[in-house]
Length: 222
Image 1 (cartoon, rainbow, N blue to C red):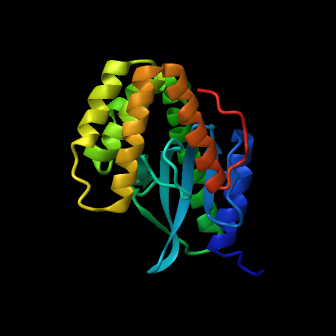
Image 2: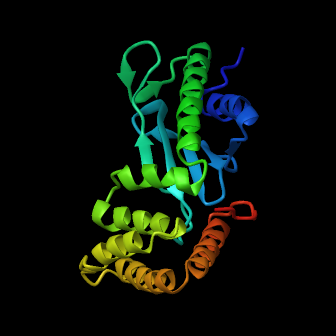
């Protein structure tokens, strides 16, 4: 009997196991999305150049920064114990062995996804998770995300503190940092003038980001 191979097992089995949880595969890739409007959870069975098998990346991407790609604001590479101690790469040996591996990785993924869902179930619950998380580029993205969530819950003082710290960061003539700082300056003004207008602007950013990421057009509820 012809072997299915590791790619087909990942794409087929993971899609079946994730379907009851509303988690969808992105196109024909090994990347799956749990979509919650203002944020998405990504589950990536990342390939390796050195052999057949997979890494497992799980994390949250907030959709309130305009970009057309998925990135991990919270989370990332996972070390998982599926019976032989914690490891990060899971090698394909044969179909039967790898089906069991993917089943266990999907079970682990659902557990992590449910934790993220609970921690981010609404913006008031999410503020604690967002504020305590340490981000890549913490002084920049950490202050950005914390400033955004502060504005969304109506805490103008906190918004100002985080955004002011971000605006102190030198742009070093890097265009994307300049663009981000300009956006933060505008959001800071909006937040101090009207929280309602600030929230409306964040929703506009989310809608545009979702369009660029080719995510489904849905009503954004914050």
